[in-house]
Length: 304
Image (cartoon, rainbow, N blue to C red; front, side, top):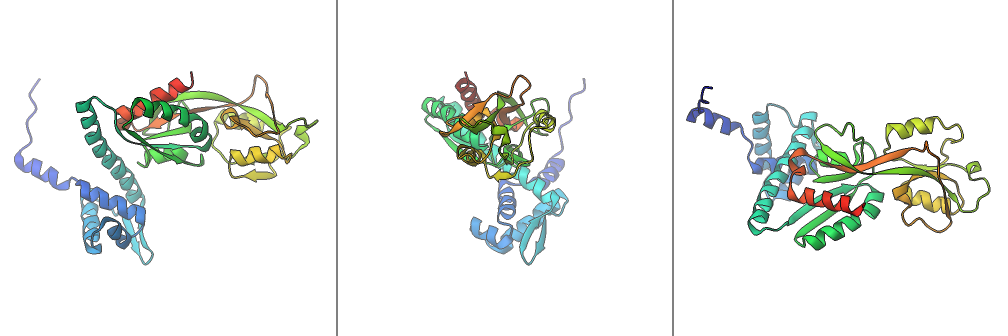
């Protein structure tokens, strides 16, 4: 096999001229976050002209318009939104590089760990895992952000570079593009009603918007006894509070029933009951990092 021909110095310099430097990535992220050049400049302690110059240079290098300029600020184009997501992920990798190098030298696991999770996972699944994680590795600094499981949900936080790992409802067979993950638990849905009510199915349906699997949606559509929801709540905690007060019944996943309030009755939906998969998602580059792997170990251990 022929040996690879090294690039000429001129070619190497030409390639380097199109690379984006970390400071350019930080400016790109700031403009995307602040939706304006002046606001980004204030946040970074730079002049507006320096920010504008940097964004023009970045646009030349990537060959696309990243922001629409207007009276109301700077709105990212589709190219800009994609570029900002990649920029956040690259900057996080640079931070991880330094953190993991220091950890390797000292034989410790340290650093900031950004977690996005939907409400019931943040309340009931994460705390025991984080308690074990920080007891084992006192240098770990968890940052937990509760995300509504609507649309992109926690997976979107990871894909866009806002979180290192997401705890989300997932389809194990086809995780979101660009992410990898695994199932932590399969939780069944249960019929939840006021305790002691003689005919809970006669009550209004209390519901809230959340992500659920295709199997659950098919099951729901096939149940002619389930009416259209007439009471909509913001989250599962509000659903349980309304049901406990006798204002309706609901169909709720098991994790949400942890520590359910007094006045709640729970009835099994039978062998064909729907379930949802709850798992973790991360980018391939961060999934192999020591912090994410340490959290996943504790999440799995907490479920045993």
